[in-house]
Length: 197
Length: 303
Image: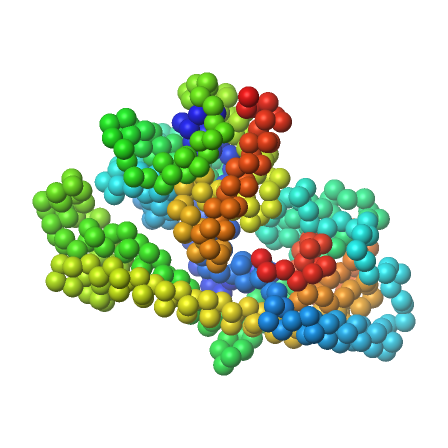
């Protein structure tokens, strides 16, 4: 309805997958892998940039999802597994960077925000992370769709800038400029909210 | 906020934002969403836009004269009228929902629920069903065929982009999973097989010859493919403009009892929630209503 899609295919819904997890049906893992394997791989690859690590992260994600549902019944299954994969991949990234420098888009994207980050919070503080997550969600809601897309592509999905530029059919420098502006806006926003000194 | 925390915090972004982002990503990948957004009259210029406006205004007048004795009581907006538009406070969602038996986008649904019943809202009217568009022929092909062509080109582009990153490793062939490379890289056989299947033998044979990865040739091919994508996108963009012009008179005639106009490629309807609730249009479920943006109404934009 109203959308300009040309094809449609019956695929098991996320609600049905969640129901399988609740029934402790192990097919849920295979179905998750079939439906979201590539999606999860992409998230992991942008962060860890290593195929074996990606596979490991994927397996850890499936196990984590299996252990989390039940009791959790996620409202958005895709966002739920993306969050788990992201956290696992980031942990893997830091585990590796403690030993050596790893070429990753995560390194680059974090260098882009380094000029406004301070170093006095405890990264393990879940409450703080949740509060800041809410603030950044609020900031993201204040952006237009295109800006939000660029921000999320770069800092959530950790996409290379050339990929974002290609998707939006603009030059890579246009993406850099936009990211610079978004970064400045976020800095102001977080300062106003008292999240930055 | 330190880097570790920032990364951690990004995992706490609200689900709906994440979900919306992935939806958009998927849509961009199949180009449907971007094409519906990108309908500037760049090449046709202001003259064509003005012509369409005059033509449409004329049509509206004719329809009103012959088909409807009741005059619209609402003047079409000028630059600063107090009308509700899509803005920074709008809930961003293209999800289709039903509001009093009418197909509306969720953004519009939210606006209708939150607005005063006598507040005018700017709405874009489209057909709900895609069949008309999918079968619309332009440049000797249907829209659905053009989209399919574009999807193929973009899939190829993605493969080329991936090969740029992996070509230097793939040139070692099975060594990648048997012995591994001197820099410590080692793939599993399953992953190797998956990647080889992903690229296909034709692409691999073209860019990896006798153990040498032909990076420059791949770069040229990427540029060529990118040009083809741009050409196809332009064709689709022009098709959508032609389609919008084609369907506009019919939509306008259906809504001619209300304040309706055609501008910048869209049919705009200005109506209050109470009027919309009681709208008198034949087969209203054939249409899909979306909250309009002021920028899109005031001037053509190029995404």
